[in-house]
Length: 59
Image (cartoon, rainbow, N blue to C red; front, side, top):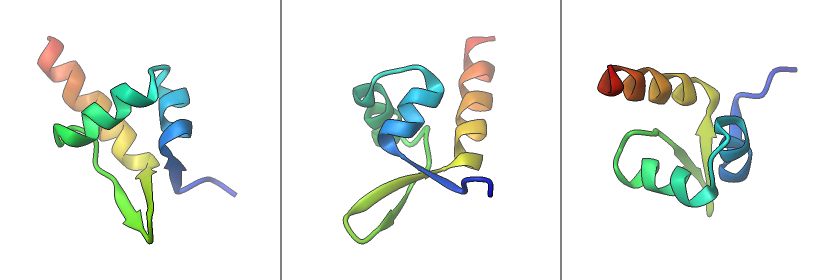
C-alpha cells in the first residue's frame, strides 16, 4: 500500500533536509500539512507541490 501521509521526520528524510527545515517550510506556507489530533502529517502530494514551488523560485 502506498503511503498517503508522512510524519515530519519521514518528510524530512525524503526531502533530505532537517526537521527544522521542514517546520520552517510549514511555517512559511510552502509545505501543506494536515493535523490529526496532536499529530502534524505531511501529505505525499504536498511534497511534490512544495518541490515544484521551490524550483520555480530558484529558476
